[in-house]
Image 1 (cartoon, one colour):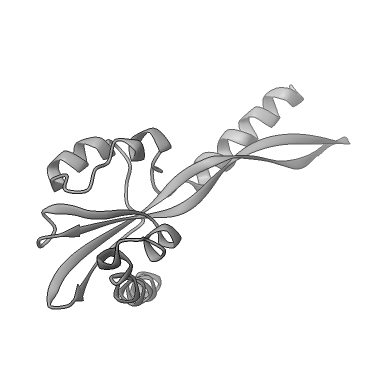
Image 2 (cartoon, one colour):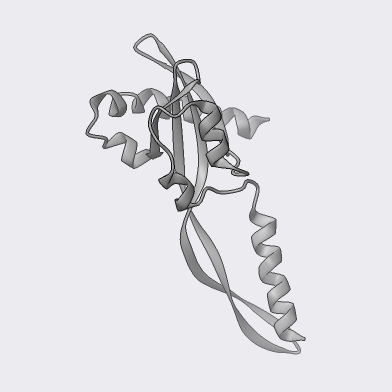
Length: 147
């Protein structure tokens, strides 16, 4: 009975916290710069963005879609007391923010990666986008909190 309770609690914690479907590493490995938006959408499957916003850089319009990327699992736990207390380990997914940047008015993939990867990109045209992307991201996050 207690084992069943622990399993149910773990499922509830994971489902209750999931507001979007995260990306998996295998999906990201299939992405290519230059993919069309429709090709990439097929590769995204049921993954859902946590945030979308547009931004300008050097007179060009870009679209950024932010996702949670599952990077691993971490053990956590909870204590259940039914008259005696027992520690129940729970495996919790670990996520990092992943961004896909579309150019050509949202028609093709220009860049993708974590914010850190994109900021440190050896391609100057990618790393130069990041200040504008981050500023637009902060504005979009603030508006999302208001709404």
